[in-house]
Length: 138
Image 1 (cartoon, helix red, strand yellow):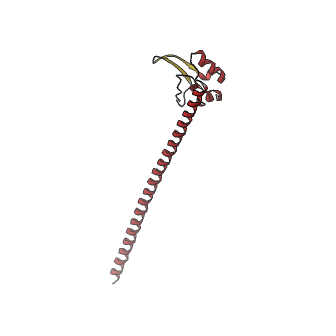
Image 2 (spheres, one colour):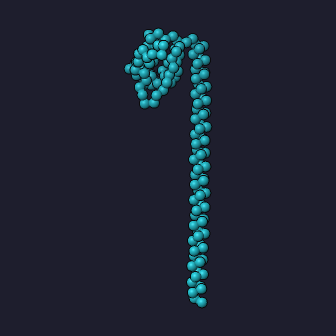
Image 3 (spheres, rainbow, N blue to C red):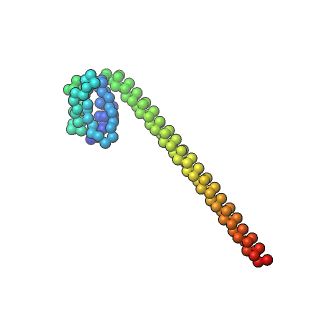
């Protein structure tokens, strides 16, 4: 499986013209070959053992490998996209954490307000109870 992961996540599959990699979590890696928008063939890549076999399959199926310059440009572009996506996810995570923290602070303030109101009500009731007893003694 490490060979397959390297082939897919290391952008090796995308070194061939017309190839796009779509990750579907929890599903087997399948090479789906389309022609004019119609599915022609599906090949389970995990059945292949090495990256060399995967590259040979791509050539056997008629995919043309890009030039070295195109491959480098594609890899630079993909790594930039990955870095941008990573940054977006970090910012989203920070925003969600801020919302959680803000909500926690609001709940804390509401709790403290209710606690203070209860303490004041208890003190008032206690004070009223004392006054009632003093009046009864006279």
